[in-house]
Image 1 (cartoon, one colour):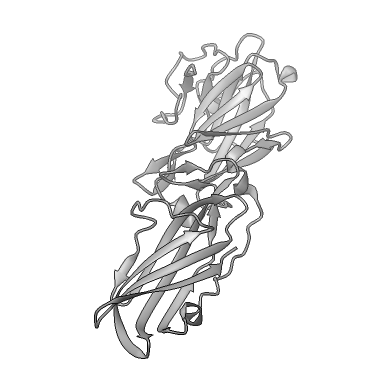
Image 2: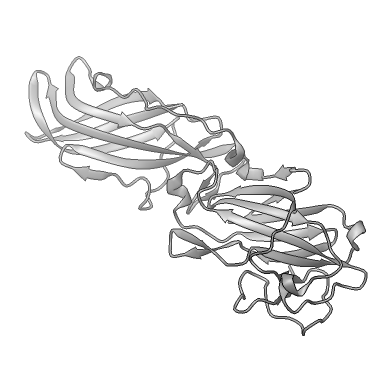
Length: 329
């Protein structure tokens, strides 16, 4: 897509994709050019929002105007012949409502790409935030812009935003609130309150094997996005499961033995966990204990049943496997 030039009229403000110095004082603009306004400007009008793995972006479009003032942009350029400027403001809240677990939001963030669409005009606004390090985001310092369009103020029709994150584009209309979110749609679902799975010591026992242990399986977290894996496919979802196991001893055939190493193996609705990547699927092991978070790619209606197998190495020699299936849906 053609990169659209923009006029930067605030000192030191050369931020955001597609925002480059352009034009002389009072020069005419072309449709799609973006003039950066003062951060103190207040744009009122139609608003909507988009949810991303990096939080919430609020987008506002104000009433079109035929000219800009020095109070708005300093050295004010002219609108295209017969055209106008469309005021736009945005705000990014990294802790805004989102269906993505906090641990996912804080991992490997990427910049968003926001495009304003007015008829045949497409204006590349860049991202309302920048990525800091491996886990953080920060404001760019740009909050208000004026987009040059060919239409006169009374002729500006439908306006929409396209917001792209890691290859997925959501489209939203600020005037109607209509949104095409695609694979990101689960982010807008009402949050559900999960509960711990009923993982009991008795559930691992058999007539021959009696363990002395504790087991905690936290409520699963569903997410349509997972860093390193991207967006879930249609009809699928990612599920994160955190679990903690402590096995003090196991009595086998009347003989009790302390437990040294415990290695957990988990499947969810028959699905193996995603390959270990340092965040998920790599349990922390200590004598007689194991804990970790596992990620699964399962049917969008899930999760259902978590099958747990604990391979226990006995101090006196030999090993035993403890097994239990618990509902987590």
